[in-house]
Image 1 (tube, one colour):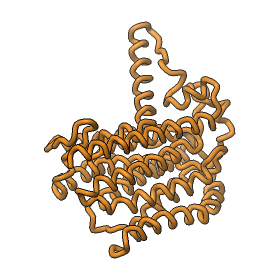
Image 2 (image 1 turned 90 degrees about the vertical axis):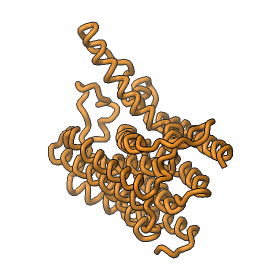
Image 3 (image 1 turned 180 degrees about the horizontal axis):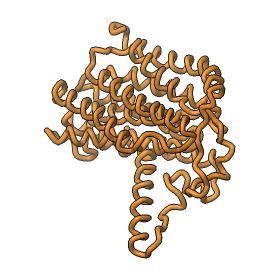
Image 4 (image 1 turned 60 degrees about the horizontal axis):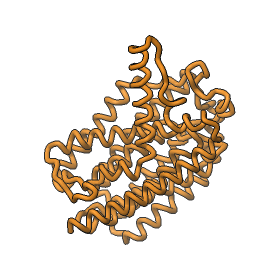
Length: 344
């Protein structure tokens, strides 16, 4: 539907995934329960919140099949597929969703939290991000620029490709790590999606990135519809099928709009989740080598579990993280327009 009015495209992209989620959700949950596609929960001896999360045992996962399926279908129906940016967003989202599906399926069949190997994950993410980065570099030379808050724009040149790889792969895994509490990842994605809708609107005044907006609308609506069933207590989890794909999609949008540094602000919650895991792993290995036993920097990582271990309820952690995400999103949008005004 390339010739639809852009406003109508966005309206349809908001309606189709949300209505689809509400209609399909109960049926999908019933099917997943019948398939015994329950989310494996880590054992307490591995340092996980077994008592707090014991009630989650058996809750069906792979809800991301519906979430991402609706995003992809809606984008194919209403967005301008002639846009290189839309093509890249679709390809990366589809590949990372497929990777997440394989991981979820492995966990379900093994009845274990261990899915596909880490090397396989990184390898497939690398191929998806590399293909996207090279395609953008060849077809849209403008994307090699990057918006630097308080400064303006700089051209990365050939360094754009490795930088884009880092952003897409890093964001995919960061959102995946955030998906540990009911509604946390989907809620933060809604906020980030709205912020990037505004950022794309600003960037599109001097570029051709506007066709990405229906894709973002589809993500916002699909996550909202999914949150209907994923809020605490969750009736279904998105699994890696949803989280890896949502992160890949968000990272690709940032790369397409030269907003990689702004993603650090808008997606600050995702960044904090990923950094907390890196700090935890580094500190554990360092103290084991230095003192003979590994020590933890946080009560538990990712950081949302640190606050749970500190006595906050799951709902309190989620809502407070949403509040922080909202504040960061506003700051990110303000930085975007403030910087762009100095450039043009």
